[in-house]
Image 1 (tube, rainbow, N blue to C red):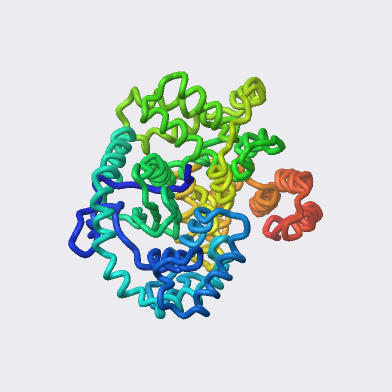
Image 2 (cartoon, rainbow, N blue to C red):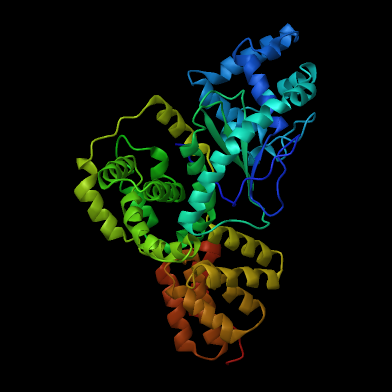
Amino acid sequence: MFLRFIAAAGLICSLSASAIAQSPSSRVALDSDIRIFAVAAALNTASSDGKFATDLDPDLVLRLKQYYTVHKGTRSDESQFAQYIGLAVVLSDPPGLQPRVREERLPDDTRALLGFGPLLREFYLKAHITQRWVDLQPQYEAAMVRLKPKISEVLLHTDAYLRTSLTGIGPRQLHINAEPLAPPNSVTVRVYEDDYYVVLGPSETSNLDDVRHAYLHFHLDDIVSRSLVRIANKDKILAMVAGEQDVNKIYTKEFGLMTVESLIRAMELRIDRSTAAHAKDVVANAYRSGLLLTPYFYDALQTFQAGTAGFGDGFAKIAEGINFQTEHDRFQSTFHSIPVPKRALEEVEVSETLADLPVPADPVRKLIVEAQTAFNNMDNDGARALFQKVLRDYDSNNGAALYGLGLLASRATDVDQSKLYFERTLKSDSADAAMKVWSYIYLGRIADLQCQRDRATDYYNQAVAVGDNTRDAQASARSGLSKAFGDQCR
């Protein structure tokens, strides 16, 4: 299976005579991409004596083959193709074919292929790819015409199960490409910012299970991301399999990826209405590979199916229901009794690429970083709005947001509000030691300014007890103990 976060729309867009036109209200398009075609043609030349090598500069062909062979190592052509498609989707349109972002922002496996760029640009010009592209358009359109009804049925069936459809304008787009030059029966899924690409190789079956798997990831990526904060003890859950053999190591490192993949494995069984015996085997194998939440989600989805709400509205409650002690007990009683599932070579190769896949981002962390940046730039209103969004939409007791609002209140000389937020910071489980030590110090200073010396010294003593020395906190706390902050209470 190919693990990606890919979302959704209703119907596949209509076909025109020259291309696949995308409706402005749809987030899914069956289309073609000259960048992907150019890379596929170059790989065809580099890995075989394909038709694109005819009448091409022999020195260029040799250099393409040498580059491809050196970077391939012992990996299969299919796994190599996926890596090169990762490069294709970050490039600008031809003939430039330059990376659209700075090198440090690229995934590791894409960055490793940047040296292929000059060869690709030279190949594009010398192999007359623009003309080849025009000549082959009827072949590409015929392939997409054949795929359209099959893929439409898969997407509609999935939407029906989730009781939702991601129609309407939005930044995220799913592009499904039929690429005759891709390895036979392959499905390659890559993501670049808000654009998601599924590249299908020649196949009699169209690899519809893999298309659905990708579509589910796109549907569920944001939904899972928004609810990660609702799941307690994430690190403890991952730690259960950290030292185990024969598990996919990425599932022991990336909780978001483990969660969304566990959910999708369970959901595929529910959508297919698998028999109890088959579902038991699939859930067990997924669990033994490191997808520790598959059994929980498989049971929880039965409750979802009995309701009427869309999955986007119901997942938050499902996430909150994950209990570490229950999962720990399940692990202790079942994990080691499950035989290690046999792994085909293709599964191992896919596993090796997981570390380079995007994982559900933590939206809370992103908002906190943006808020802290706004605070440091003296954008008080912007920082306040972002901190409040964290409390309102994600976590009403988020320590970083509470502490940030306390600092903003202090900056505005609003003593009552700053006191309120610093006190709430101290009660927050997610506030780190630096936030707590300085909350005690600021509360001590407020008490000193209000001529409550005994209370102030109590706060300073608690700051000392925390022990954290961020920004010389301990010196500030001891200074508060030796002398009252301010002099208006003399």
